Amino acid sequence: MPEHKVLISEEHIQERVRDIAREINEQYAGCTLDIICVLKGALLLTTDLIRNLTIPVRVHFLHVSSYGGETESAGTVSLRFSSVSEDLTGRDVLLIEDIVDTGITMDYLLKQLREENPRSLRSCVLLDKPSRRKINVIPEYVGFEIPDHFVIGYGLDYRELSRNLRYIAILDPSEYQKKD
Ligand code: IMP
Image (cartoon, rainbow, N blue to C red):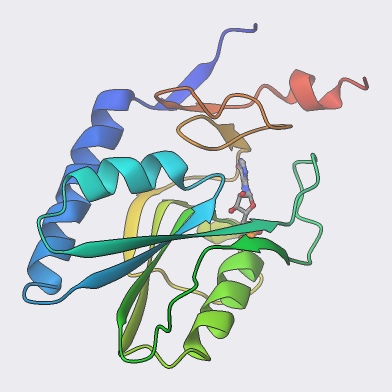
């Protein structure tokens, strides 16, 4: 395995996640929050975040895909699986994503969720790459803004690998230039 260039350390991530959880606890005090975890990338963020939430939460999962094993988005999003079996009408909903890049995925998901008529709908992402935006989506809770690198770790993958890294690393371009 090549040496990874660490962009954000485990300690830094954990600290930021605790800060975001604190903000959410304050903002939603007195409410029950319906959290929608977007698989697979938001899995680690969701589990760490909910451990730090003290308000009541329900957790749902959606599985979307847009990359198909490449480092550039295909530009279309497909919903592969949804565990949102309950009616979200009148609920406070928080969408949790790993990263906003072009914004296409988040825009698609927010539009779908808005049709459920929630009382409130916000989004939370670990990473934001604003320089790559094609659709103007602005998440309410952002862990870190990052420059235009393809990154892996803490849920984010390249060809399904590296999600288990406890930190965020920049994928070495030699990795995706290799043809297998
Ligand atoms: P968007 O639709 O272009 O905003 O892309 C959103 C999805 O693309 C994310 O949920 C990720 O799954 C994936 N993605 C975007 N950038 C990266 C990256 O740097 N590393 C890993 N996955 C990424």
